[in-house]
Image (tube, rainbow, N blue to C red; front, side):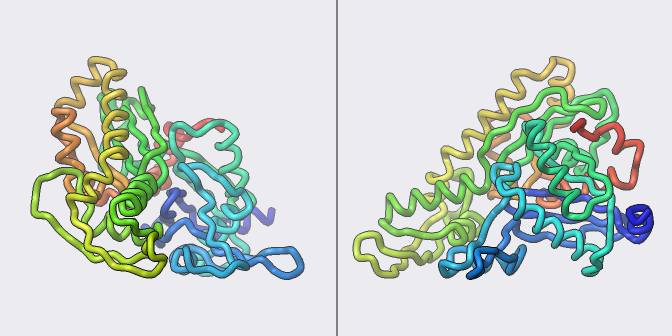
Length: 344
């Protein structure tokens, strides 16, 4: 009875639970928040721990915390790595969507990678229920991205989506509200950041943090040699002298650093195309490949993919929010939601 009453006063939510960022869509209100998937935990003297901050505030603490505080990313490679911290993070986002009200029981759609196992599905579902969800539906991220990009996923024609996220890149061919063939590689924005850290360490004997690597990727990162060379000053710790140091990094250097992760993503796209039935492959030649996800915003990535596949490449209007927007559209159509929900 309580759940039924609480459900009357709850907004249904769609959540893109990403490795790097979590986005929340509320029915009738649109995208309410987009924050890093980071939780700051303080270890207390009595052996317990408490949540200090979630989201942007917690990310500011990354790499700057004392020994008693840990900034944790509870989602690794698109799946839950820390159940309790994920539950705390989901509870924060649910309450934030309901103006901090405690007694809410919303229906929630959560977007997950298509490669997720049945054990991982149950972990996501149980985590959401523990955080206060009345009902939980799981849908695949490429399916949500296709809907959010304006595709009609229920018709008998092929649509191909490449979702470059923080922890994984999901490639899928969609037809008749189902995924015909797909592949996932655990390569995304995080691996790109890691590649930049290793390159700067090797080339300049400079140690930089994850946040600095992300800024480098966004500011001067590029996938091809085309266009003007950009430069930026970066600061870190000199590995030889052990003191802070500044160097100038060019976009050409960043392109070299990103070669391996980018080509792993391209290989995954080509492998998926090789497994695509011929009739659907013909549709993809006409319609092209749709690029979504935060990693898809890397400069000239669409041009490189077009060169490698010889197919039209369409970057979604807003690649970063395409997945959560599609899940939000599914919230508004129970018939569509019934067709695309994953079985747990």
